[in-house]
Amino acid sequence: MADIVDGCIFCQISNGLDERTHLLFQDDVVSVFRDIRPAASHHFLVTPRKHIAHTNRLTAADLHLLDALVAIGTRVLREEKGDEEDVLLGFHCAPFASVPHLHLHVISPASSMSLLSRIVFRPDSWWFKTARTVRTSLECSTTRS
Image 1 (tube, rainbow, N blue to C red):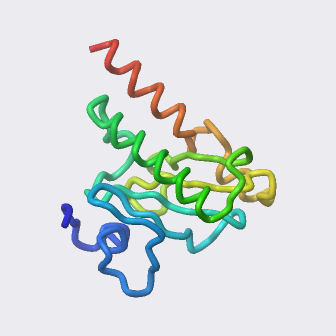
Image 2 (cartoon, helix red, strand yellow):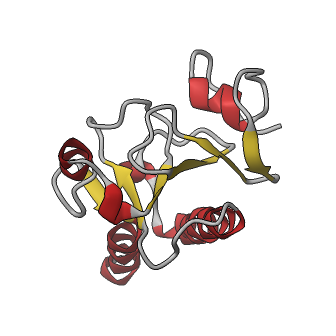
């Protein structure tokens, strides 16, 4: 079992300790479950089992974790018959994340989102960054070091 922070619901869920949440996928590193307020017919959260608060806590050493979150999220989307061509993959930035435990949103079809959801999950806004943008930022941090 990974590091669990007391009071963190995503630590509980991602480590299989919340009986109300069905895990779509779990391995030693990540877990996947459905968002309780879906923005589209396929809306999953991919979380590391280890507690990491937000993307601003990631370093270049976490690129492998970021890649795993994206790969597993994409795999579950495919298995659940989601549209891989019309997908949004991203993270809410601190302090805009509703739960302070890193979680990748996998939303498909992104084109079906309501106006409010399009605002809440606006790619590369101050409050929401795509997985690609987060990856680029981490890669740039290695070249600055």
